[in-house]
Image 1 (cartoon, helix red, strand yellow):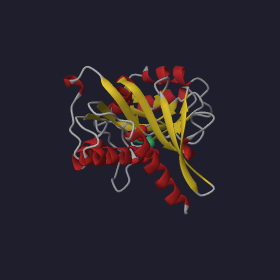
Image 2 (cartoon, rainbow, N blue to C red):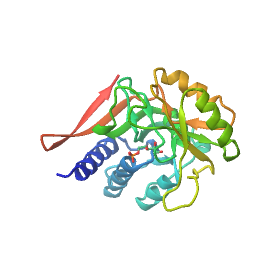
Image 3 (cartoon, rainbow, N blue to C red):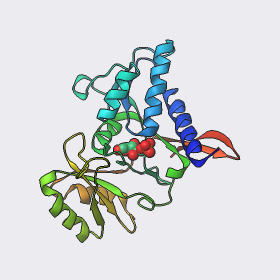
Image 4 (cartoon, rainbow, N blue to C red):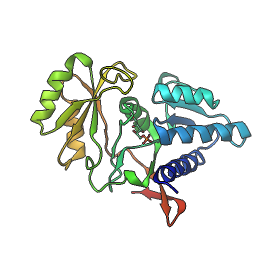
Length: 237
Ligand SMILES: O=C[C@H](O)[C@H](O)[C@H](O)COP(=O)(O)O
């Protein structure tokens, strides 16, 4: 199996394993990204087969809106419900304390709102996302209001980070989030205290939200391929 095929298999497996945990009658937070997309697809399959009934989804991005419609998942909004039973979402990095970096798809602001409100938050990743320390493989995304991007980048440099404005692919200029903002990706040599850095960054005027998710994860489902055999491992605190 090529590395690309193995990654796809791992993402499919954890997407399915997470979708299988959703119970009929639940309000479900629907994450963003390529792994969460498989979860949304499998939820749709369970609904179609009649095995799962009466669920409503709350999306975390425009991508989620489109996929939920495509797979027949009814949607609601945060002002129409008083709780979320379960949220399932991908991540870019997961550390041993189950803290995360998210935002590779620029959706971390809505994800943090929805995932943080859920009674149970399940993270779905392939094994390449497990790290000893956050920031070791992935830059930390920070969503900023466009008019403030330059002073925010200077403030981040003063904190020891190396910021770069995320640029579009097949689009001239910066990436624009679902909220109409920009994303600054930051390299920190070492993120020793994620909880403190999360607060410090969010305290810079012009920052809407950063991609550090601290103490919100209940369970991580990790897709692995060991000796050619795909499997799903559970990690909880
Ligand atoms: O903004 C995007 C999200 O945080 C994604 O959940 C994260 O980037 C992981 O995406 P993927 O499953 O495609 O690796």
